[in-house]
Image (cartoon, rainbow, N blue to C red; front, side):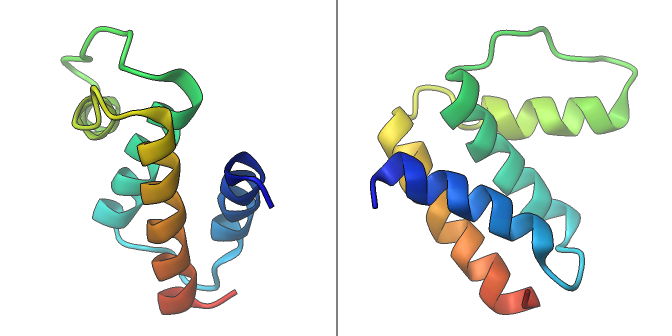
Length: 87
C-alpha cells in the first residue's frame, strides 16, 4: 500500500471511531490533514471565529512540514486515535 493510500484509508477510518476524540486530538488531526491536502497555510487568521482560529492555529503549527512527514504523522496519530476510541 502506498503512503497516499494508507493516508486516505486512515483519514476515512478515523471518522468512524465510537467515541468522539478530545478537541485537542481533533485539532491535531485537522492540522496534519490540512498540511497534507493543502500544504502550508494560505489563508488569513480569523479574529472573531473562535473555532476557526483554533483550526487555523492547528494548521499553522505544521507550517514547513513536508507532505511525507505530515502523512506519516497523521497516520500515526490516526492509528492511536482508532486504538484509543475503537471503531
